[in-house]
Amino acid sequence: MGVVYATRSITSEVVIPFLREHSCTITDRDIRWLYEEASKGRMTSASFWRRLGLDPSVEAECLRRYVLMPGLSEFLAWARESFDGLYMLTNDVTEWSEALRGRFDLDRWFDDVLVSGDLGIRKPQRRAFRALVDRAGVTAVEMVFVDDKIANLDAAAALGMRTVHLAPREEAESDHAHAPDLAHLRLHLES
Image 1 (tube, rainbow, N blue to C red):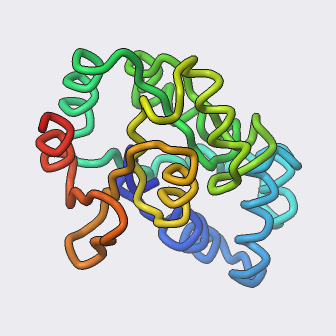
Image 2 (image 1 turned 180 degrees about the horizontal axis):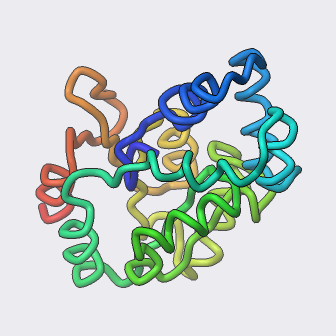
């Protein structure tokens, strides 16, 4: 979220509004907890929906609310040609990640995709970044990690990765390089 998808908080911007439209009265806090558990692989997406009192068939309707970051395809085409490998490390429910990558044909751009629901751990846990380094088969110092969340960038930087904070200008973080959008990210990576 916030790098591949324009949504920066899946629970606040997509899941909770969707649930409210479907008359779900479970607290925001409990919804966030259930999502986090599902994104750690501790329950299936079907179990997630059932625990919220909804039929799992609503999932497709919810996932239609995801929108790609503007300019993503152009950026990924450039990155694919410019770097030795391109990897995605995402905090997401396994089934949601698979469905969205299929819908947007994203797997064609990445050498590998690591999903928290498969790993059983979420960013910013150090083990998630170790798994990324292991899958890429390079050292952390050879990698550039892009994220919109400071905690994730801090964890990547602690392993030695170069980091870029992809976020609006008003959220620029001084400890990390900053790009307000994918066009600026490309300019930063080209330099």
